[in-house]
Image (cartoon, rainbow, N blue to C red; front, side, top):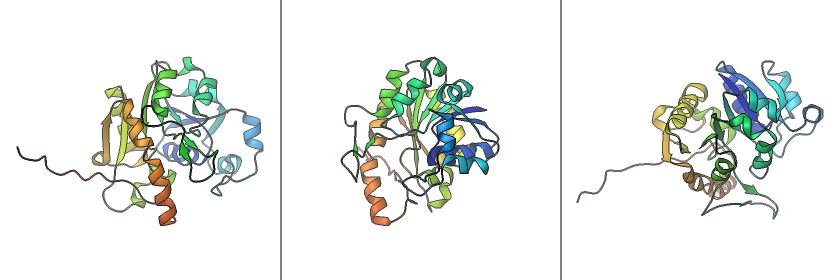
Length: 234
């Protein structure tokens, strides 16, 4: 499948590499290709710049936001949540028409320092904002409740744990679930369909507790698990 990934950070790199390994044709999109290839600094977590990663992933291709979106039969938003709407607008709304747009971003606001707050919550979500901004896309919110390493290797967390999907289009969620299973290694049993795109409010609001658990554990190799009991008898 042709996939477009909007973003070049660690999430884009790890997910993109796993999908390339699974046989997909992936184009990464950035605002300024030349500037991205000139960067030499590591990110806040010590990850190497995209130019270094690209040397080890020869099958990856880098282009503009617009070209990546046009290339993808399915598109993944892996930008920072505070700039996602702007990046997707630069990619060209018309390039998303009729396509599945997987949103893995979180609206984390670091303007007041750490820990971050959410720029939107309770009555709205970034997933919903994206769906409103690109009404012809089939937005599916997923992968945003765990670290990038767990996204691509669920075995980093022992035992049963869940990955959530939310979106308005049932067929789109089914196709994304298949990609999660066949491309990233998630068992069908671990994928939990929460309902329509408004359920992105719930998954995004897991991030404040995720951040604090990260600080408590000292590492990001953990995830959430929903244990479901029997319905109470009348």
